[in-house]
Amino acid sequence: MMSKPSLQLWLELEPQCNLACRFCYNYWKDGSAPEPVRRSTLETVAALRVLFENTRVTQVAFSGGEPLLRPDLIELISLARSYGASSILTTNGTLLTRQRVVELREAGIETFQISMHSHLPAVHDYLSGGVAWHTALAAMIRVRESGSHLVSVFVATSRNLSHFSNVLRMVGQLGVTQTVFNRFIPTGLGAIFKSEIGVPHEEQLLPILSEADKVASDHGIRIQLGTPIEVPDALSTTWRNIDLASCPVQVGQHRWTLSADLTLRRCNQSGSNIGSVSGGGFEKLVAELRLAPEKRYETIRSCGHLASHRLVKLGAS
Image (cartoon, rainbow, N blue to C red; front, side, top):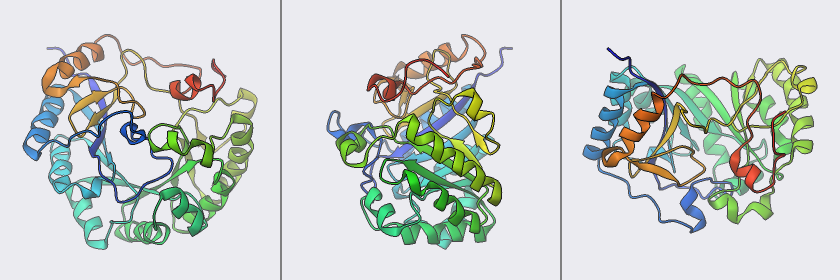
């Protein structure tokens, strides 16, 4: 009997959001494509069951838009748990009340990822396109009080890049032990605001990350690069608290995005899809997953979007 291929899912289950982040990557928000139509609970559950029953889904990240706006979110999280998948909720935190933290945890959320883009409320709110800093901080405190795993998420633009170490010091005081550092990729609303908020280049990123590595060491924090950054080996070997990342998009990849309209996409920065789960996309997905075991690369593969915009060097470090 052939074993099930493994799969990690990034679920963009809710296209709507209560904020308008200037760096938002949702591909349709630049006006180049229509917003995905959110499918019903019945359709979504049916699609997820097809994936869960025919592949070994190891991890599910519930995202959006803002996933807490989706009325059936608890039901979908419970479904993922019933199939043994670990579940992550990635949220701006503004709707995360104490009661919701409890409900989400009981449903199966193991990790809460909450955005914190500056130690200064005005900068965080400016980048978030709405009042969010105080409510996000309160949500972080509630998650910590519940005993759940909390991960802070930082999107690095030219406007807030220098704030990263101070954010680490702040979340470190809350007992956060892991943070995700996402280099800004100008898609969606980010494409509209690119000139205003700026895309940092390697020569700007590297000294900031070197400083952050030392701060992370002081506070017991692990930094995960959520988007690829080309780092010279001579520098990366000096870092003790930073996990490098490589672009996962390739033939045979095991990490896929599922949209609210139930189409399967290789990359959450792109609207290109291989079809819906019920419309031929699933068959293409499984055929590709069975091509070969996941490849391991010794070099970092750059983000294709940044490379196409000449915002990163071509080639690997």
